[in-house]
Length: 56
Image 1: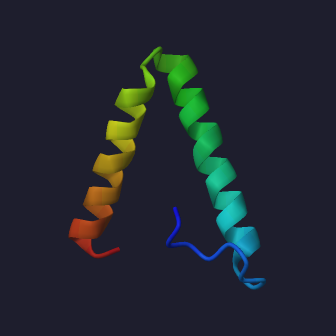
Image 2 (image 1 turned 30 degrees about the horizontal axis):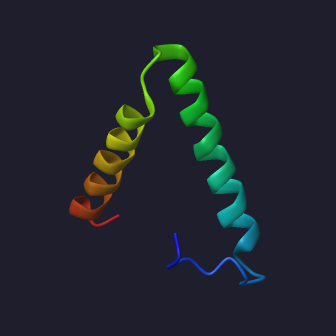
C-alpha cells in the first residue's frame, strides 16, 4: 500500500472510503463463507490480476 498517496487532499477521501468498503465486504465474505484469511487474500489477488490483465 506504500505506493498510494493518502495525503492527497483531492483523493484521500476516495481512497479511504474504498478501503473501508473493501474491508467490510471481506469481513462479510469471511462471516458468510467461513473461509480463512488466506482464501480471502487469494481472492483479492485474483481480482487484482484480472484487473491488471484486462487493463482496467
